[in-house]
Length: 229
Ligand code: CA
Image (cartoon, rainbow, N blue to C red; front, side):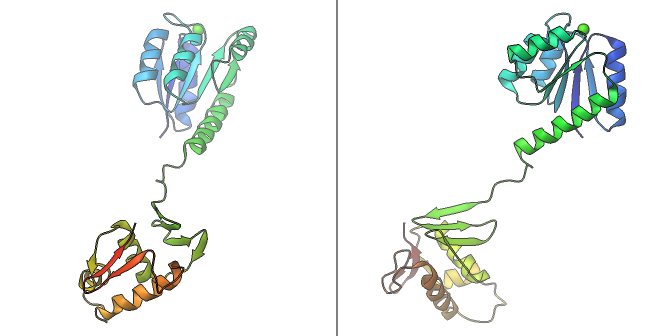
């Protein structure tokens, strides 16, 4: 639920805004003084600020400037005077929207929703970025389970992908075939350590320029394999 701070010294207006916003499902706090409002806007986590211009303590100009120095949440400035709105636009304080009082509460709610939606798109959906490994022309997207070799996507089976990713995540570390088999294949798997050799061969065909002289997955004779960096 989005949390909104209204900094407004006219109680009737603040209450009306609060009622409408709460009816639309927002959590709303009111602060009547400019100085107290500024402190809360900076210290607490609000998703949007509705800011009156003329306030006791610190005025809306100053509050907007200070919020902008630290936060990029949407700020909607409201004022009773059309002239003041023109003035703040001209000052470029960084408010996202301006409304002249009196305005209809439903118009305010519509603008609040629009700004919150826009801000969410800007900061992203909160889904973490894909985890990517890049080594000398090989790019492995672990999240999407896709592999590119010099910009060209190659198709890998599930086990080939797991094996390549495991080796690439542990560069220069030599693993025996037994270790690789136990890491990548579970114990119920049909097959044996020869499976590792077969998979290494398939991976090399996809990533190596010359499989006879592998540049990525090296064979350490008598020991196993390593991903060379
Ligand atoms: Ca006022």
